[in-house]
Length: 525
Image (cartoon, rainbow, N blue to C red; front, side):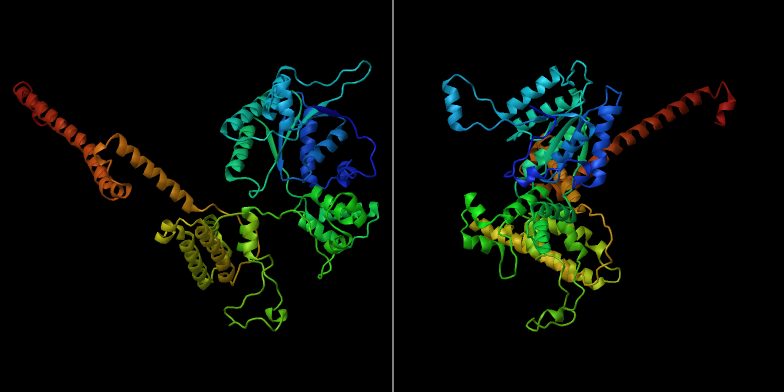
């Protein structure tokens, strides 16, 4: 663990990311409202808080390079607090492990070391340092890098460890979680981190999410650095560097520094570019092109918004050249204001079925009320996409066991669904905020699976003679009969009780008949 109270002198050869690290709240590129929320949360617990039972854990999520750690460092300096940061130990190489093994030192994983750290925090809470003659300085704890986990057992250990940390810390503790793109991690890994985050919130931690830095904010920061470094970079080049950064300001600053290097500096950094190639990667036939940049990724809802809003250029398609294919007026469409649909799908890394389901559920909200023909066209394309997505179940695909064919069919299905929505929606509504709903089809499928599991359970437990029957036969033949028999079984006790009541009435009547000789008033009854 490392405690910082300030920064040392800056070296001229250091990275621009470290050289131009923000030192004040005004220099932060993060949204001002988000900075104020974090500042108020920390101020309440460092200065104004008198409640010892108050939770002191804050979880900040967001993609890499959105200013999570920079915001905490700046606010800590602004509030005059001592920031103690957990530094993940350097990974042990195999040679070091073998050397330590021969010397009697046992290997300890990063998760084990983090558990030991949390246990020390629980037993010996981190308190402000008390110096004679000086006022105590408030302390904060920053956990910027959680140990990597692999498997359910490691996930359970880390969840328990963080749960203990949230419930035992006595000073403001900030846990930073970087949201990785789906293309960088499997679905199971992403789901594990979501479960871990939800467990932290359930333990009492406060959660805040940082959005990617806006392109304008990145451009302002890059322009300021160019003035300080006296770099001859055009506005168009700064704009492109900001756009390809994907909201990662750290990546944008690093790209700018790399772009501003001279060919001799590139060689001194052990790059493979020669003098000619260094000039070549800077400029192209179009005037400017970057040979580096962050892989562009989109969230599912961002991609769906592009498809559903269907924003297009306002200029006439005839102005794009005379070599275009002439189409009838009902087939002509203006160019869309986005990349090719297949590229957007690749950036979102989604399968055909979820895309088609989401489009089918929400597309009617983006169609004009009078555009009945558009709705018919969109529905037709979505049906074609559904047929292509289920192509893997065909006889030829099952016999050949060709996964490549399945992949191609899914790619084609996604393309048909997206392009069908873009083409069919020729009368889109005016752009406004729409809530993207989850497909109701998924709820029906979930109920279907639940009913199937229930029927299998009933077949295995109560109806041993039906074990050889499949689910479809049970649902169409046995289940209705069992339901009818069940209703008859419920009605039978009612009939029996009615019979008992009739018998009771007859008995009373019989008794009353015997009493007629004694009391004539009962006769009218």
